[in-house]
Amino acid sequence: MAVREILKMGDPRLLRVARPVTQFDTDALHLLISDMLDTMHAANGAGLAAPQIGVDLQLVIFGTDAVNPRYPQAPPIPRTVLINPVVTPLPAPQGGVDLVEDWEGCLSVPGLRAVVPRHGRVRYAGFDPYGDAIEREVDGFHARVVQHECDHLAGVLYPMRVRDFTRFGFTEVLFPGLDASQDD
Ligand code: NI
Image (tube, rainbow, N blue to C red; front, top):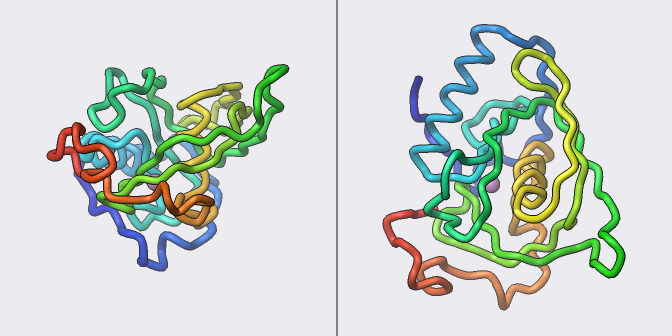
């Protein structure tokens, strides 16, 4: 159990395409997940991908058991460990739009937020730490978090997806009411 250093944008390890996990339910895998959970909770993150602590594997964690102080408006997402994920966009319900814009931050891009377009609904599939299959259809903030975390496995950071740079800035300036001690 340990809080690990989170790599920041500019570190080339964040730009790698991660390798699939090939062995499940190993001591090394459980230790890695334990460290990632400790690291995410210490930083009040909504999610964390293994490449963010320098581990070149297709593994993401996300979700909260309670309200996250960094995202106080967000509905709770079940705490999930997702390995070797595949994310598939789903069409919006009738009358809806497929791409939805909302604010995002990233523990590897501290102090900044931007509006990022994401698919409003996705199906995601993958495995839990024991190798059992996970498959869910989700929307809203849950869908956004999954897309953000899985982007890390392809070496993509959210600023690469920003289209409108007038809505990209420092959290303390954009959202002065937000708790300044919660650096993202
Ligand atoms: Ni991130």
